[in-house]
Length: 325
Image (cartoon, rainbow, N blue to C red; front, side):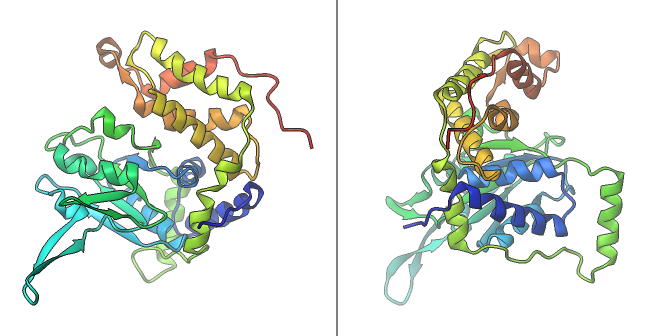
């Protein structure tokens, strides 16, 4: 059974993780916070960015700093579901079949360029992401604990790619992007390269596997005022009423917003939720769940802009505050 960590202790752990990761990689602080919040919320992350921005090394560094096993799958058009989950292999010695695990059996799975594989292969991840298990030839195998997916996709190259369907996008807790560093950040990147002999930066383990698993239960101890539950519901419902949106946030998305918000509170060492926690995670948690109308797409309306407008128009609870001591 996983030991629980009080939210007030979570801040120390995630701060140490962030500091160690940032010692090796130049990352935007808000981006790293979004990814680590998703990790705390027991969710999966989708990164949409151009090549060379550090997506792979970021995923690997998170796994190393948390003392977790890491696996990478390069998605290609000829990738088969069995290449992800594993398959039964015939044993010549005793004439039996034995299950050979695929790369999905890792704590942290990097699904690189996930939109390059056909839908059938993409769907092989669905059960793993939702149920933390895979089924091969009628037999179910549990995945390691903790387990989370960091998937990447290239927003520029569309030839030879398969757009992720809404059902699969909904499985990702957050969608974010690393982006280009500013000039000082890119300069720092070069100086760090000059200071080491290896081409890739190294990260030191900061916590162990048991602590990593326990961190992902910490948000469950964050209390939520009834007014804030209403606020989360109102935000999701407002996306469905926006004329620029054909399909708004689903009930699952509403639940994910609450989970991410509680994780954001635990990230800051609090055992109670405040409106700013919800606002902080609303865009990366909700934007990728929207299906815009044809007119909105023609006018190049951004999903994140819709979420920002919703945040600006939905009334924030004024009485929600810390519980009395």
